[in-house]
Amino acid sequence: MVRSLTDDELKEHSELRALVQEKYRRNKLKLDYYDMKHRLDFIGFSIPDDMKDLESVIGWAAKAVNVPSDRIRRTGFTGPKGNATLEALKALDESALFRRAEALAQHSAAQTSCSFMFFTPGDTSAGEPEQIISVKDSTQASARVDPRTSRVMAALEIVDRNRHLLYLPGNTLDLNRVGNRWVVSEEYPTGTNRVRCTRKVWRPELRRPFGSARINRAVMGHIDRAVRTILRQEVNAEFYSSPRGVLLDAHKNAFYDKSGKRIDPLRAIGAIWGVPAYRDKETGDMRKPEFQQLSQASFQPHSELLKSIAMNFHADTDIPLGQLGVVQDNPSSADALRAAEDGLIAVCVKQTDEFSYSSKDAAMNLMSLAATDEEMVAIGKDMAKIRPKYANPATPTPGAQADAGSKFVNAFQELAGSDLALERFGLDSEEIAQARQYLDSKDSKSMLQQVLESSAARPVQGASAGKVLHPLEEQKLRAEMLGSLRQAGVTAESAAKSAGLEGLEFTPDVPAAIRSDEA
Image 1 (cartoon, rainbow, N blue to C red):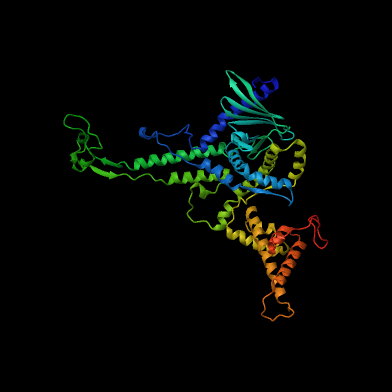
Image 2: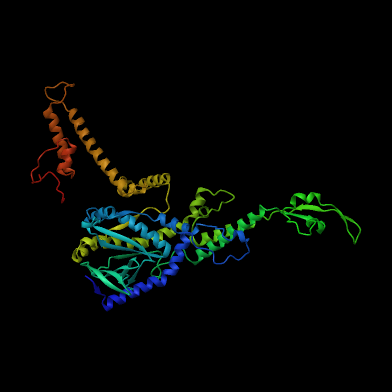
């Protein structure tokens, strides 16, 4: 199916495409700084001709982006137990590579202030996954946002020069360029009024709803100054490797050959000790040539300037000086190093709050691929009780986490063994689930062992103290174990397996002495 765009579709597409083109030059400049491909526009001092092609590179722009981005790591979702939406979301988190796509979007947002996640159903007959999540930076996508609700009303994904995807409420259009105009080659009804596009924004403000990039004007200015300083050091080092001497009171005839041509001073260096003395015609005194070695200019001013620039960079980005290559004269203590990261941690915590909202919106878009609008209403109510969970941006050491967990358990002893206490020890969701599984298995075995030991201690009629239990007596003990587990709320199959009575068939009716699942 090929058709022309309607007036509304054409207007929407034109405005979004113009917005991408308007911001492209500035966003491309930020990416060039990140990739260390931007060349100095102004050097400001003279350098030898053979050093004009010298490339001095500094990776501070990548540091400004990577350091906070790497500390913001979503580890999953958390919510009340028994929440069906939470369980479905945990499954999608891995099967659809949701967490990986979200990490890419967060990193791109730090580079150019915003990025976009698009959600579309895949063509399984063509070998595609059921859900496709594509991530684009601000040079390849844009969106129109309702200023009152902050919801995406329309979005544009640039696949290549001749193919665009236009996301609208209830519809997704596959656009292709034919000559000088755009046409709709495919149309995909979504069955929902949601525009399946999520923005990832770095530090949004009222004046900047699409955020501010980590690579801003201040960062670019500091990088330019640092590169110039490094280039001055290179030029200074080049002059240091050249001869730095001066010959005083030498007659000019010593630098010309017999034919009157001037001798290259570099070639005459080896013969300076043989330059003869001569008599001064004006004073009549003998003038003896004297060779002196000039001292090399110090590198310290350049090093101090580079250190000063690094401090300015640290003040604007909160990146610790140690990660910028600045070595202090006196090594800092562990507490001082942690204190130097307070600003960076505050930036990460603030940005984690912002990413939490976009993570829930992305989860809603992902789940809408297999749900109707009526079902999404119920999912939305469940999502209100779910929150994304992020790793601690302070990156504490295992020893510090263990110490914090011990103090927490000592202060709140009634919470010992809870998931909250285990999180304080640094365990993530998967590790807590594994620990729970192991402890449940261990507790079941311990309970069976206790029942067997207590029963073995009972006096058996007509049996000596060292007599082995009769199989019927052992079977009775296992049945008692099964009853204890069922009364504790364990399912029938799990209780039978733990008691060593696998294969038992249970009646559909639940005895009154056993707690039901609803209770």
